[in-house]
Length: 253
Image 1 (cartoon, rainbow, N blue to C red):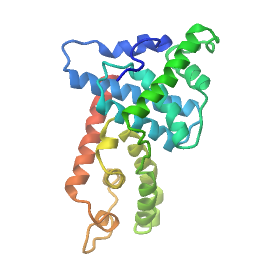
Image 2 (image 1 turned 120 degrees about the vertical axis):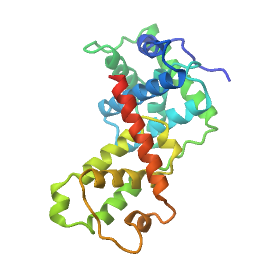
Image 3 (image 1 turned 180 degrees about the vertical axis):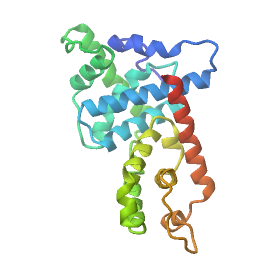
């Protein structure tokens, strides 16, 4: 399938190349670190553009879905990321202008720089973003509807809050930690590998355990009551993937 590759990367070209060094490191490990960095770029760019959390999450999912089918060496990952931000804005009905995405991305790699002039370089990059969006749509067979864990986590938090002593709940940032853990899940392909309900339960489970908050014991575990098809192995699998992402983050510093 033809489409934009590593050409016309403009201000993103050197940034994309910086992740390809280190011959002694295994290829899968390098790829995971690159994906982690690019998703961090998506999230920081989304914040600077004023995007809501769900559109930013959708951009990460589109990015991971795309590279689930193609090699990261075939396409410039940061260009794909920019196109995913642009496409996610359409999917989640928070439209972003390509000019804003390009300028925010330019400042991400060139701190303190002025916005790009509307010259040949800018229009080439804009054309690449639009062409790459079409490539992503074709690669995903135009299947861009996404079910996120966010609505499940909100429901689970409200349910669990009603079971916990209100003083214990107010003393511990269970909700804030759960949302932070959920956001971190989007740095890797785990966000498309696990069911959204499982991710929501696992992040809440980890937050509760981290602060030593116990829930009343009944015939079933609390997470079985909220999600009856879930097993402890499902929770462990999500948490294991999340801990692996934190290990990758440490190596990216």
